[in-house]
Amino acid sequence: MLALLRRGAGALGALLFAALFLVFVVQIVARFGFGKPLPWTDEMAVVLYVWVILWSAAFVVPEREHVMFDLLWNAAGRRTRRVMRVVSNLMVGGLSAWALPATWDYVTFMSREGTPVLNVPFSLVFLPFVALLAALALRCAWNVLEALRGRGLEDAGVPAA
Image (tube, rainbow, N blue to C red):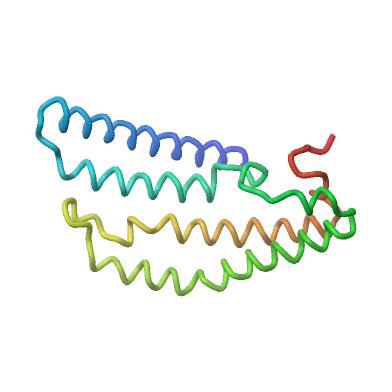
């Protein structure tokens, strides 16, 4: 089931990126080919860019591929790594979970405003940020459990055998 959800999230991310690319090509052709820029393409490209980045960070890009400062991690012993992993995930996950209700309130509040050209509600534009916070909170909770079990403590960039 989890593999199916991952494939679905990846497929949606790919579709979002393809749509962004298509809109970008239409924008270039209209602006430079016909000398008539289309205002909706600028707006749609920005909305799709926000969705691609936030959706991918939440559901597509694995944790090991995110930016990581691993000098201290690789120099630390196993016990210290466990503490570092638990503390860092409690901080990031806790802050994400703490921010989630206020973020949801703001995003739903923004449904009364729309984008200037297409009038897409801002709640729809920024909905993937709520998903990102929820995914971060869940991923961090899982990472804390894994660290307490002694898993995920190998050198950064070097997968366990």
